Length: 365
Image 1: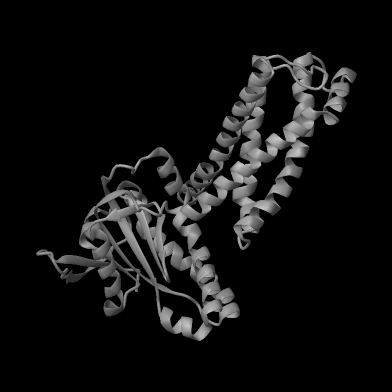
Image 2: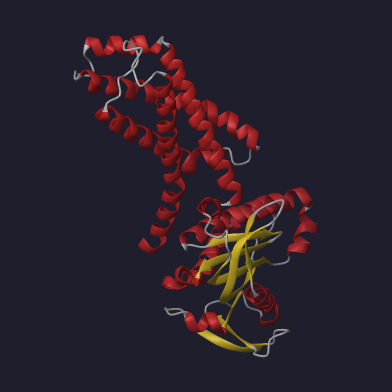
């Protein structure tokens, strides 16, 4: 159970943490601008809190926690709730919710900061008087505008991250692949069975809904076993791991079985809604690729190398061997764990002198 939960927790932490960082950096920037505009003086002591190091540290901590709270709500709940809405609608609806949420937080944190500044109890009349003055002041309006700006930037980040992928976005920001590098990676090509006949049977719109439900059902397994979605190509998903992460605990193999089990658990729901249950065939291979940013009109992280070509060919052999999963000899040799494999011969690859050995897990019939 721990093997399943830890990668998922790590995934959510990686997605939530940037919200706290965004809020913290924006709050420092806004504070700097306001301080420069007022000559680093508190010109409204009746409503504004004089910033010293204690107040600054408390405010920084509070803003960071608020950012994390927003990220938690966004990633675990609200983002999923408005998943089917357009980008503009998402921003509008979420802005309203988070502004109300931040208003409540502001009502809590201002009296706390005021009590720290004045060195008195939060329920002291002087603290309450300052709080009431604050609620009817230009400072309160300025604070809400600043909060709205922070919310908007956070939602913009969330939307871009959702469309590009969290890891891809971080790689763009860090410039990790700005100059191409060579990596050893595992690739998994997941191809839906009988997709052409399914599309004809369901029609274009229902087939699109079917694909969306299918992809959503596989996503938890990919997260749990530390995979990265490289591409969605029609009814095919290309998933990849860095070699170490994919081999650890046989993550790449367990991902296949987990995805299969996930679809089986939802077979009744698929049958009821679409009249059919999806299934897939998978090919996997390990090898070196060159990874880098590519594109003139649109940037993306791109992998090049014959590993992808070989993986696609292995996947196509699944039908010939009547198997749901086939892996290359290179991957089989690198794997170590409890799952046993059987050899199925070799595959000839055009342009290569050496044939590629093919293996199948004994459980994947």
